[in-house]
Image (cartoon, rainbow, N blue to C red):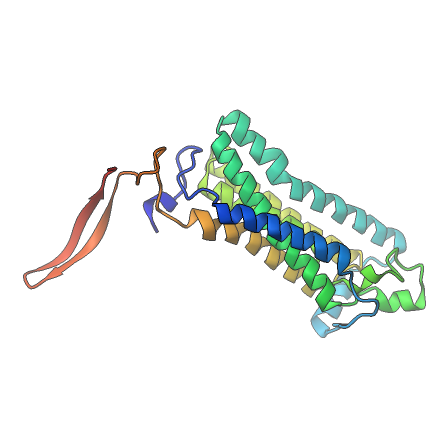
Length: 277
């Protein structure tokens, strides 16, 4: 791993900045997501019933047996997902801006957060439409239209993936990757705890969605996987993985590296240095 890819000693931006094409791509992705969400509604009839022994077993274990219990689970999952999704924006960004006084870093984090949420949102809305999976409550709705508020609604054919889990998993990925590379809270334990907190909230949201009979376990797993990969993977792939750190003038930062050395009379390592031009 490149030296600059390790966790920084203080909050400073040394990785590639948000690029022009990323600004355009993020805006286009949000526009596409909005279009799919508002003009490509889930099908009137499910195209995928999706029952299987794994999902049925988890549903039998976790599903609330009463309407009141399911309604409570819906409320819990709504609040957890909303709070978790807001965390990177409402907590981390103000800390970077006001506590560390790093508006440049705050801007980079903000744009990466928006980018990851745009991609996750587009995938979520597209899969809702094209997968057309019936929610686990569909058979119960057919027998009792008052079983759930979504009975008779096209949203009852949008089970895959779990949107609630995807959004909070995206936030968890963002928090984990930002705190992995930047000491936002100033200590390894505190930064690690932020990642664990959002990960636990993601798990709790998934359990609540199954308790509410709104999603199968595979919906939850798919939403969590897509969300976390978007939140952690995109910032890492496009920014943090790069070791090509630059100074304020855009020049390579000074550093050293070890290189293999081989020749007719020598075998070993050499030290190479890099200094600003």
